[in-house]
Structures are given as structure tokens and as C-alpha cells.
Length: 457
Image 1 (spheres, helix red, strand yellow):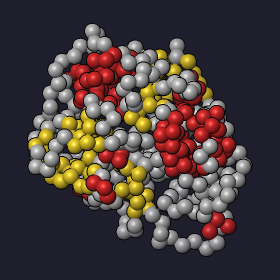
Image 2: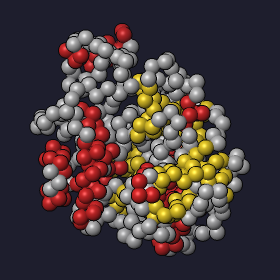
Image 3: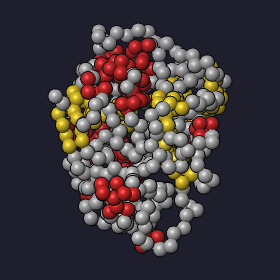
Image 4: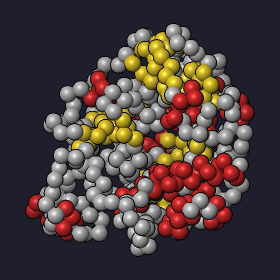
């Protein structure tokens, strides 16, 4: 029987627009793009030039620090443009899809007899090492470091996150092969949702732990903190559930197939559902005729807490498993702002009436409240208030307020002592959501981790 870890700290945000469990149809767009900035912390070096023909899984660029770590094309086609910015920084590589989906093939490698070094090298050469991250620093993993464990969370508790039981339920053979490959690198810890029947409960070659509680209990950072906290000098790897399937496909089929099931979600979507997409896809054609109304909308590659804002002609983040669309709210004007006793406004602190009506009795009479969500900040930045509000939504054994202060002041010694080695921007997204001071906590954490990596490695 799996161990059970329960936490009451956290917050499930009730957002409308969850994807129904059906796969929509869409035409594969002609234009894709690879954006090196999405692969945080690397220095890209090109191996192709404009006009070159590539296959799905062919290398497009590599990391200067680790030349064996390739970054590969998601589709077959032609390199249309290499766009550069200041000091010739590579901003994006545009690829024109040929519609054939020809795959680059890799020599067979039997997992049973393969060594750790062979597995790591195969993942680097195939471009799949980019989907393995590490703590500390939340960057693409250092292949020369042996981690003490690999963590995989089979469920996502973020707002409107895709249901991995549905998404991966018919891909468990590839998922198991991915786990088997990762187990060659280090012991694998697999987190599963408690209280529900899930295909992940029968996965072999992994240490299974059940988790119960509100978001962010599905984050690997929370699971690491409860099972194997990261101390100075230690490293753990993390892999997303859908990315484990990429690894399994490589060893089962000998190709790099980056097709993933992406949830199109949000209150501004006409018919939220799932779509089979590839990383770097141009979202313009996908979203055509799928957005409600004529208001200005924000398109988010990812979920509303941690995703990246992209333009209407932008490209899907290679790590994103959902696209969320909400109104910007710049056309909304309210009398007295927060001072009015509003019904359809969410508040963790119960400053409005809506949470008081979300009792079992009231839901039976009025149903669930449909909150009005948009992208407004709803306030201005001010000094940090030591109110304990971060502790209520961050189920980690750290002191978040003191850690954030150390990060703001760039005090490396205090950052080390207060738990910065095991935290990532996604873990503090709820802290940012409830922050009275409106501090950009995810940005603060990201910049601080980059500083630590630069100064301490």
C-alpha cells in the first residue's frame, strides 16, 4: 500500500471553463517556432541554417555548456527563418511544416541492458533531456550530476489543469517505459492523487506516494519537500507526466514524437476541450472562432497562475499542457472597486459574500457561483505585510516571508538557510495570487535562483 501524505494548506481556485473529456479536431498549422528562452538557462548554438530541411527529432541547436544536449524540431519541414535580437541573440527559429511528419530514427537501445550513461546520452541526443529539470535552480538538469532521486507527479492541481488519467490512460505502456528509463538514472518517486481510481497506481519500478489536499499539492516541489528535501550539495530531477511519455516513445518506437494532449480552457473559450498539438505550434489557427465575445482577451500558454502571456499569433510553450483564455479586464470599470459587497468576486479572505454562499446548503439552492475572472491586478504594489498569508497556501516546511525578503535583498547565505534550493517559481504562484502587497514573487524567485546558480556553482 502506498504512503499517504495529506495537507490542508493551499487553495483551489474555482475558475470556469474546464475542458470536457473529448478530443477536438484541428488542422496542423504550417508555421512552428522554437524559442530558446523557453529553455531557461541555456546558451543556444545553431546546427542548421535558413533553408535547411529537418525531420521531426532532428537537432536544430544545442547547449553551449553541454554540446551533447540537443534541441530538436517538433515537425518535419524547412527552416524558414532564424530571428536574432541584440548582440545576435537567437530569439526564435521558425519552421515551415511540410505536412508529412517524417521522423528521424534512432538505433534500438534495450532498457534492460542499458547503463545510466547510455540512457543519459540517448536522451541528450534525442532532445528529450530538455524535458528533465533539476532542483536546485529549476533549470534543465545537469547531465554530469547524479541525482539522489527523480520525481514525477501524475496529477496536476493547477486551475483548469488537464486530467492526466484521461490524457495518459491509453498511453500507459509508453509511460511505463519512460519510468523504466528514468529508474536507470536514479530512484523514481511517483506521486498519485489519493481517493480516486487511477491507472498510475499500478506503475512498476517507482516508489508510489499518494497525496491529498488542495493546490499546489500536485506540484513536484511540494512532493520533494515532504519526501526528500534538497540540501546543499544535493540534486533531484523532475519530469512532467506527459514528458515521461515522450521518453517512453523514444525507447519503444525509436522516434521523437512530441505530440501531447493540450487542454484549451478558460471562461472565454466557447467549447473547452482537448487537442492533440505539438510544441511550438502557432496558436492563431487553433483559436479561430473559439473565443467568446468581442472583449480584449489574454491568451496564456499554460495555466492562469504560472503560464506565459502570448500574442494571438504566438507559439505554444514546449512545456505547456494547457492554453487558458481570460478577459484582460481593461474595459471593466467598477464603482468603489473592492469596497462594494459583490457576489461574483472570489476572495480567499472572505472579504466578499460569494465564499460565504459556497456552503453545501447554498449550493443546493443556488448552484455553484460563477465568478468573474479577468487579468486585472486589482491593486498596486506596496511594502510586504508580514501577515502569514503565504503560509496558508504554501505547504512546505519553510518560512516563505523570510525567504522572499532574503531574495529581494540578494542575501545568498540566508537564501541557502531558508530553503531556496528546493523551491521553484511555480511553487510560489499561489503566494503571488493571495499577496496583499502585489509582489511579483515568481519573478523574484526566478531571478534569485539564477543569481544563486551564477554565484554558488
